[in-house]
Each structure stands twice: as C-alpha cells, then as structure tokens.
Image (tube, rainbow, N blue to C red; front, top):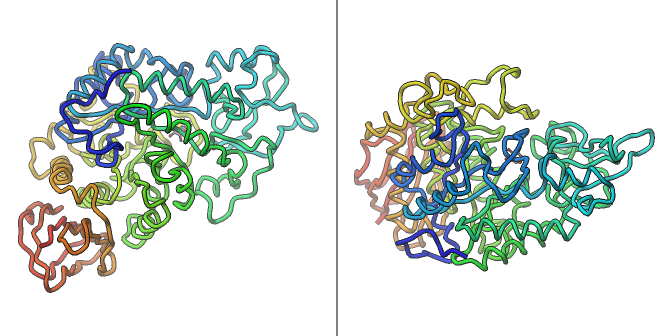
Length: 542
Ligand code: GLC
C-alpha cells in the first residue's frame, strides 16, 4: 500500500474532502499533450500548475478506463487499466504523484452498475448459459409472445431489456444496450469490485466517484415500475415511468457501507462520492448512513436543477441541511458533463456578473464545492451540433456534447487544447475569454474564482463553519457562516432584477472581503448596503 501522495500538508481531518475544493476534469476535453485530438493524462500533468494556482484540493476525472466509448467511458471493458487514448498506467502513477506534490488528490470515476458489452465478463456470460460469468448479469427468458420480461425502461428511453439472440434470453441494461447491468445479487460481483477498489486505492488514488449508484441494485422480483408522478425527476416525468424497482433497492446501502470499510482501511481514508441521481434531497439521506459510515459526498441533483432564483435555491439548500444526517457533509455542483450542462449557460445566460454570483454561492455554502472544468472562467455550453455529427448518441433531453467541449486555454486554433487540426469535439471558435486572457486581467472571472478559493483557505469558517440563512429582501439570498455571536462571514447575492438593500443590523460593522464588483473589495460597511442586480458580496462582520 502506498502512503498518502499528498505531501507537506497536515491531513486536516480524517475526512479530507470536507475542506476541499474538487475540480472535475472531463479528460478527453481538457488538454491534449500528444496532438491526437483527444485530451490525455500527460496533458493533465502538463497543466497541473493551473490547478495548483487556482487552489483546488482534488481532481475528479470522468472515466479513464478502457472502453469502446458507446457512452464515452461509462461503458467499461477493463476496470484496472487505462484507456490508450488517455495514456498508460505509468502516466496515471505519475499524475498521482505529481498532483500529490502539489497537494492535490486524484479521484477516479468507477462504474459498478454496468459494464461494456465488450467486457470479458459479458462476452463469457453471453457465449454460454453455463458460464460462471452468467450470474454477473441479469438474464430472463422472453415473456408471452417474445415480449421483454417487464415494463422497465432505460434512462435513454427504450426498453431496459435486450434479447440476446445467441442465448435466447433478455439481459437488463439501465442505459444503452451496450451497457449490460451487473447483477449485485451475485456475491461474486461484489468481490470483483472490492478488488477493483483496492487496486486503485493501493496506487494512491484518493477516492472514487461512483457512477449511477441509484441503479446499482434492482428488485429481483422484477416488479413493474409505476407511472411517473409530479415528485419524480424531470427525466422520469419525460419518460413516463418512475424507476422505483429497476434500481434504488435498500440493499444498495449495504454495499456502500462495505466500500466505506475498504476506503477507511487506508490512510487517509479514501473518498466515496456517489452519483445519487434522485429527485428529492430527502432521498439522499440513506446514502450517507450515519454521516461517517457510507458515502463521503453525494451528488445533489435538486440543487443543480434548481432555478437560479433566491427562493428556489434557499429552499433546496435549507432542505438539504435539514434532512441530511447531522454528521453528513453536502456536495454542491452547478455544471456537469451530462444533460444539465454548464451553469454559465443554464443559470447565468453567459452573463459574467451572474457567473460570479454563482461561483460565490457554490464556494461559500457549507459543504464541498465541485467545480466542473471551465466553471472558473465562466465557460458556457457549446452550440449544439446537428445530430449527424454528434459524438454522444444517447437520447438525452439536451445534447451532452454541449458541455464537453475543449477547455479554452489560450487564443488561437482549438483554444490551445490540442495541436491537432481535428479535436475530438470542435473547440468553439469564440466564446468566453481563455485562461491566458483571464490570467492577464485582474478583473476577470478566473481571478474572482481564485481569490474566493484563497479566502476560503484564510477563513476556516467558510469551510467548516455553521451556516444560517439570514433575512433578506425579495430576490436576495443571504447567509452567514461561522459560529453564532462570534462574528463571522455573511454572503449576500442579489439574483433579482432590481437593486436591493441588505441590512447587517445596527450593531454590526462589516468589511467587504470580496465583491463581484471588485471595486468594492476592502470597503467598510456600517449598517445597510445596496446590491445591484447580479451583484454579490462576501462580508466579514465584526
Ligand atoms: C451517469 C453518467 C452519465 C452516463 C451514465 C451511465 O449518469 O454521469 O454520463 O451516461 O451514468 O453510466
């Protein structure tokens, strides 16, 4: 077992992610070092300076394991290897070490709910009904008239069953037919993943983002899913079905607790960050167990899907704080490689002032912020390409290529992402100013983001302090961080369309630590202050 690759830093707490800023890299689109048009691990090593300068503590990479890429890495054909497009295992080891020297931990993406149909387990399983790998997947004979075994549909809208002509049985898949679902009712599957986790943790990987956890365990009785109702995710409502029995079974938590025991056997403990795709934050609680014995972080889809309005954001953040076990630690993300896309587009319509407000929110709520690459420069979604040239062919509400476009590094061809004339996805010809341009401009979104991360480090109450919403006029969201009565930090953002007065209370004096309008940095405040629409302040109160 290798020791903690992050050197020179006191492990702040056993659960290091509670103080961390996590940065999510879609590796195919971040930086291409060998000029083949695909981002790679050496490209990440090359640009670690950017991450260190920005002040992030961990990097989560979307899947880097070998895959035929029907779902761009989320269909894995080998769980303990590196896809040649991204480099070699030696590159991975070098990345763990080089990032560790900069105080940055590496988190990989693990897909335990399904494999690729090209995984040797599935090939063996489908080639012979008596194969020992048959039980790794979910097989059922055709129903009456050759019909699929039940009404379950996949997240991409088709039947969740595909008939395997060779063995004349249907197999289950929660996503594409090329992503056969693993059968977690088989003890052998759990054993395989125990080995996979140890393989990566032994290499010094700091944790795993666990894909599509809500699909891990299906109901073995194959009970029919009910129709969707108003309380379900927009996807379930769109597809007309609630994924009640095709996933989300209580046994899921048993496996998560086992993984946590494995993660806790390492020093420091490894992060388990679950993709928990649920419609209500109430459904997140069980994934956290008692707050220390299950997931370390859980994906908060209701926050990501909220309107960018004070009333909606307050409701989802307050609900998250009230329903999670008191020892649990929330995770906040506003952009994703999936259909919801980037906050700079969805929440902010490309307005840099609004983007600063979004960053201020993300980085000062109580919990771990997850930046998606490009959030730090206010990168917007790319324009959608016609379906005929899209790389992602899955049927999703919005094309997922939009938020997977190459990172904008510097002016010039492919925005400095690659030297190839053919990047795997087109680099938008124009868009938000690049990293290089923003580094040269002290008033940029990038500097705002970086200054904010540095302030988090200087003011521990922004990381670990308690959080309370404080009264604010319509359209304004305001909250306090720190222990009551001892002075702390107040954050206020005006997401409304009219200027608003924010009161600090007659006895309170404040100093602006950071304003989305940088001319206000350092100002002293006595009593009320006014916020323009799309303006936010981080205020130290005394
Ligand atoms: C997750 C991933 C998504 C993928 C799906 C199936 O939701 O974020 O990109 O298509 O799982 O693995």
